[in-house]
Length: 171
Image (cartoon, rainbow, N blue to C red; front, top):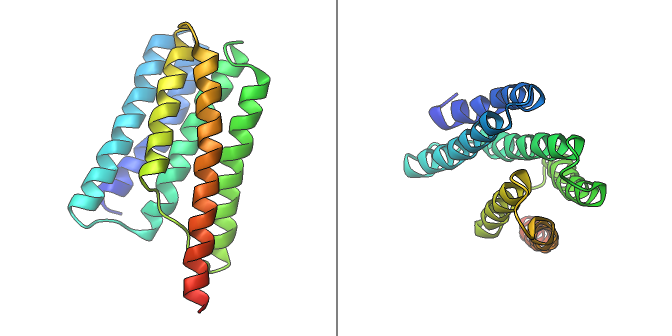
């Protein structure tokens, strides 16, 4: 358990804090917790790469913590009526597919593709879109749909990289 992995674990612990704040009507404080989770994500990745502390556990837990936090925020906004069901379902299908697919392939002994710049860009775009929705700014839903489409394109890219990586391993 190194520092980057501990920061990832902090993100898991921030999820119930976010939920409690959001559902007790403290949306701004909940938003701050969500931003703190995003900052720990940036920090743990930076520390892991800079100090050669990248671990297999971290490569599995880091995206899971990110996806669970995003799912939590998405469900809270859905519950509050700020997010349409169609967008929530599209986001859920994409994220669940990524999580389940990665887990299945990992346990089958296949190589998984670590996050790359496209995945990181997708996350940044989701944060921006959720920021717009959170504060009900103009064009929030249009921006979210553009990000959802972009995220599916990114997922297709990951699938292509996964197939290519595992073909090389089998050859």
